[in-house]
Picture 1: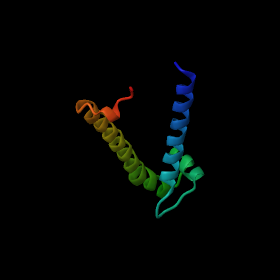
Picture 2: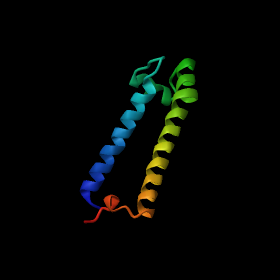
Picture 3: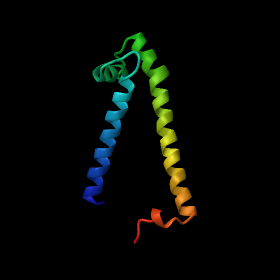
Picture 4: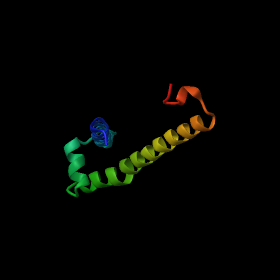
Length: 90
């Protein structure tokens, strides 16, 4: 595997995790990223557990699935219609 591809993949994965943690911490009931990590590890209060596990985490998981589905459908649409602009070639 190409070393550059590994570095880019790891960087984007870390960026996704960082954005995920920040998105969980923002809202009408704000928490710090450290509180979010502590709650995900099982050391949060009842309010923090309810906020993260019942509201924010499911919403972010659905958003991630929708984003993957939209990207996949766009890729399929571009390949089915044989759009020249979508081809990686010349």
